[in-house]
Image (cartoon, rainbow, N blue to C red; front, side, top):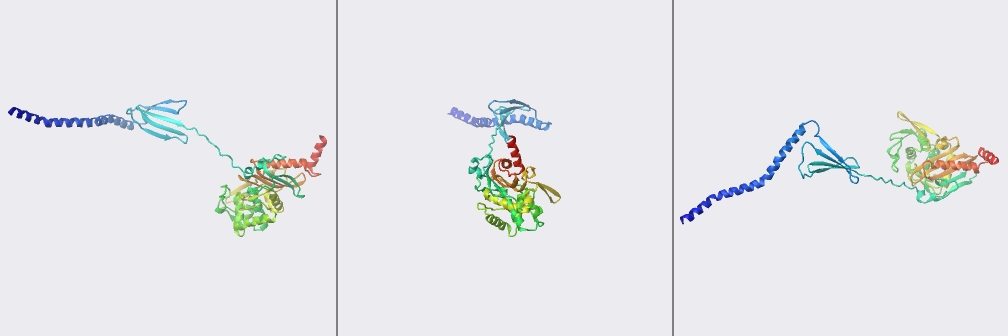
Length: 404
């Protein structure tokens, strides 16, 4: 009995020691990885602080590699210290619209992958005019004109020398200004009355620009000159806006005048022609050209080659939109050009050709200079086939036939 009791007391004496050892082992197993990590971070931190104190960046070695199928890759090896193996850090940097760089760390190296993205630009197809959408350009003619609509009339005899889709009703763009100018001239308003360009005159239909900035003040006569000669949109709008009764009244008078002239297919909604809802036919426009030719002011201003206006301390030079006005081969009595996408290139003229006074209408011509080329084709054709007896063109044709 005494021995058994002695042994029991001895084992209980070492029990606290065993518990302490077990706790110590658990704490060591738990804390040891953290201590090792901290021990590794201290040298790295020291090297980083040294690098910050040094002048200039840490020197690096760049190795570039190119793949035929993949992006260009630049491998950067840091000499200032090695990153921890297995460390994953990624950053995406954009170098413009088409260049993307991906930076990541792998196996102690900083890898930069630069990728250039190829851009395929698809240009939007050009907007078709109303004439193109209607298929009018498919109409063949003997002169191979680029205009889908054309009409040539002898002003004195009313003989139709040439016609092509002359009843088609299409947008007429700035040919509208011929009616605007005619009404302003016939109203006999004071030409020296000053008119100021306002925000209301700014084009919100097409967003076109103008050299007549808001606040510009010119006389009514100067604005009329610019509207007819250089097709100035803000000038034309200001003329209609300041008409007695306002813009709405002016537009109603435009339509009333068209009806009075017998222009059955014509409609106006504003005085500039920027709206595609201003529409007419070649037959109607021939009537308008004839009426405009009877107005001396419209004849003079529309055929003016150039004009200068003083705006503040500046002098602005404006030129005609129809280069045929300056050509010695042409004797033009009245003219007007026009263009918006819906209407194409347009031109109306009264001109003397081969001894004849002709009215010419060209609508929906495709190409920047095509309306001018069409007018030249018509002039040469009239000189060759419809010259008045005794005219220089007729004399040349007779001489050619005799010589041939």
